[in-house]
Length: 52
Image (cartoon, rainbow, N blue to C red):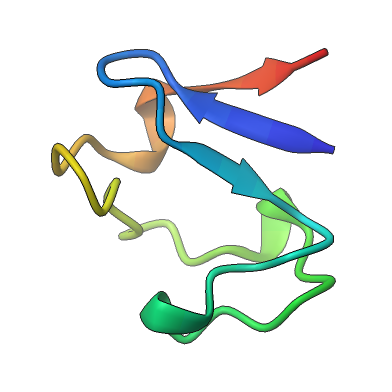
């Protein structure tokens, strides 16, 4: 599953993870820390939406 920042469009892909942010590949969105912020615009995790 992929999740997209509703403010800037940056995408988190569960399969790829986010190595620069210390999130391993295969990490489910539910397991991403609640204090995660978009690396482009700083939006909180609550600003992300499922991408179909």
